[in-house]
Length: 161
View 1 (tube, rainbow, N blue to C red):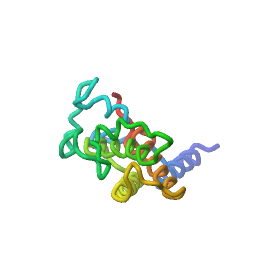
View 2: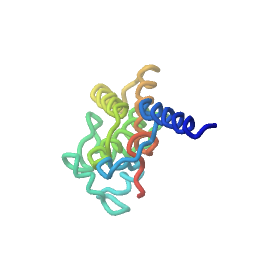
View 3: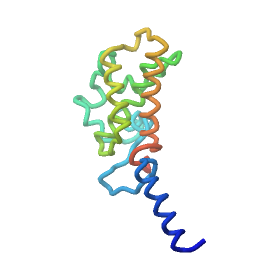
């Protein structure tokens, strides 16, 4: 193939990837990076790792009450989702994503939408709410997007903890 055509084809493919939003483009330091819920669980005032000051973004740090759960943020992120409780599955990812955003990680539009979805969910339901199949599926879908963000699959990428 002619070198000129190869360059043109390469440029067209690169443009298509860029404008489709599927490219993982390098970003300057201002983009930040994300950390998983497991990181935030262990880097709190309760340890065992040294506390990350990203927790300062919450009004009362780890001891801020999480919506209408009756528990602190730290208690919620450490509550296993018994029987697949969608509230705790979503809260696990939401808390980490919220802390990542407040810790300087850039947030793509689909993650903003998932954060808003989660906040609407937590404003409506409690951990003991009985959800319809559709309500549970919607919460799990939002949690999946937030998990992809926290793990660096979408967004600025995962930090080197």
